[in-house]
Structure formats: C-alpha cells, structure tokens
Length: 453
Image (cartoon, rainbow, N blue to C red; front, side):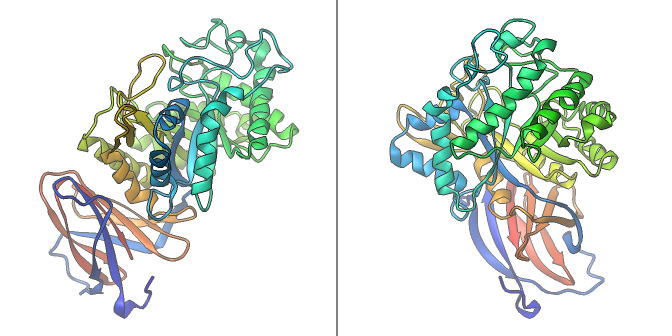
C-alpha cells in the first residue's frame, strides 16, 4: 500500500449488473487535493480518525446439506468451491463461520448425537453422523484457509427425548429435568469437535427460539433462555474449562431483539456469561433495533448469525445480492461485529432440505451436470469479506445521496476499505473524499464497488 499522500490512489473493485465485472479490479484513481469549499458535487466522505467497532469477520454456514452437495461434485469442483470461499486472495477469504449441533432443516433428516432415551449421562453420545460429510467439509476448508476461521455452533433442537413434545420438529420445549444434561451436551460437543481438530469459538443458545417450525425447533421464552444460561450452560462451560466460549443469545430476527435482549440482560447472573446478541434478517428490516441493543449494552457484541433468500434457488437473481449488501452495510453501520450467511452451497433445487424449505445460496451446484452457479450474493458478499479483515475498525463514512449506501473500515495494516452500493437504475457520479483529498468516481446502475485507499 502506498501511504505517500502525494501519490495516493484509490484502487477500485466493481461488480455491476450490466457489465461483465464481477469483483473485478477496474482501475486506480488518484486522490488529489480538493478545495475545502468543494460542495457542488455528490460525495462520500470518510474520516479514519473517527472509529467504531472492531470486526470479527465474515462467513457462511457449514450444514449437512452443503456438505452432501459438495461431496456429489467432482474433486476438482469441490476444491474450486472451497477455494472460492476460503482463499483470502482469489476467493472471499471467510474468517467466521457457523455450523449446527444435531440436525437442522438443511440436514438429510432428523438426527441427534445422543438418541438413546433418558441417557442423562450422555454415554451414547457420538458425532459419527458428522464424520460422514460435515466434518470432512470443515477439514477441507481448514486446509485452504491460510489464516483459519472461527466457528460457532447452534442447536435447532435437543434430542427428541429431552423435549416436551417428544420430537425434534414442531417446536416443543426443553424438559426442565433435562436442562443439566442439555447444558453438558454443548460441552461434550465442543470437546468432541476439538478432538477432530475443529475448535469451537462460540455457541448460540438456540436457533430461532421464538419460532414453532415444521422442522427442527425448540421454544424458549426470554426468561427460560436467561435461566438456562444462568443456572446451567454458563456454569457448566466454566466448570469444564470452557469459559472462553462465546455465548450468544436471541439468534432470531431483528424485530424483537431489543425486548428479548433486555429481558435476558436484566438478569445480571445470566448476563455475566453472555458475549452478545445474534440476529437474523427474516421479517421486517428494523436496523434501528440493532443500534438500540448496542446503545443499551455497549459492552455486549452484535453478530448477524443467519440470512438467506428464501423460497427456492433464485438462480440469476440480481436483487438477492443487493439484499445482502444493503443488510451488510446497515448492520455494520449499527455496530455489528460480524456477518454470517446461511448455507454456503446448495443444489440446483436449493436443497437438500428434509422438510422442503428450499432456499438460495451464494453458490449453487448442479449435482447432475456438475455446473457451478455463482450467484450475485457471492460477489456482493465478496466486496466486504475479501477486503475488510478481522481486526479492522469501522470508520466514519457519510454520503450526500440516499442512493449511495456506504460503510468503511480501517484494516489492521492501515489500508482503508470503502464499500459503496447503488441499487438505483441510473449511474451516479460522486467524489470519494478522505483527509482533504478526493477521487472522482461513477458507480454504475445496480452495482457495488470497494475502494482501497
């Protein structure tokens, strides 16, 4: 990076609907001195001296469905897909990922690691199912990722015998007499994954604890989640030498995240164990609720833990990528420290999914023709994940036009990354300004750029 102010340039990377540019380096523009009163043109202004949160990373989820889809591809295609996500220079450079404890809807069917009835001592606990596809995918990704990645895990449901409805699907609750065994289940999972060379960085208590789904699900009120953390999960992890594991609450949508966070954080004995609040994007956007949680509990972190385009594969949809970028910009600008997509890979139907809840993914792999479809979401995510590194700090970024949505970060090595989104149907010229210098740029219609300074 050239830090000489007399020879400062902005390197421009572009993805645009109406061109062939896909995460493409399209040029370098000089950052020339500008007059203080140059107020005539639209502009984006960044100030690296005003900083906010530090970034944990970007990534996606390892699911059984993703892993099985990957296995159905030829070896060379498997390597291409994993490099596309984990290579830090040619791929997206993922550094923060998610996986599931027991089955989720993006599994081939319901399964648990301890299915023997009333096995409170967890003597039958086994992760053999994950050794078939899920763990091999994680191991392959580890080999490609040069700097490694953090991994957090989420349960969709306890084993059926631990639940009030006697099954993993259709909601139900954790039986009170199973809370200790379920708390030890997380700890056992962490230790078993560690034996496989897969360290777990964090846990969400429960995926979507307010949703009674037709697939793997389990319901918790805010009080029940707080009590489980306070009396079981937190003390058990600490007692077993796992107190460093990040505990994340909510793991549901933005709409009720403030209310739920308040009810849980108001219990100081539960709050002491909690690292932060996770959230999804399904339902209303309500980005302001993310900010509200930060403002009320600035010592707690915020993490986007899941989002995808629902209702099928949506092959070729440009709006999908724009949905991702808008959410990423808004969430980051409201103090989110990491942003994690849902399935990394799905098949041509948007599955497999054991209840038919088909969705899109940034990479779709046709398991018959072995063709790989890179979706718009893949490239749009890359405008953040390839250029904004863990440890980067968000810096002040303002725009004079609503149509130019922006976020900016100062990377640990000193490089500034500015991401600008244009969802409108017209090109927009603007001046990128930083520290009394500026570069004239034009962002094409329906496009996104990353500028490195």
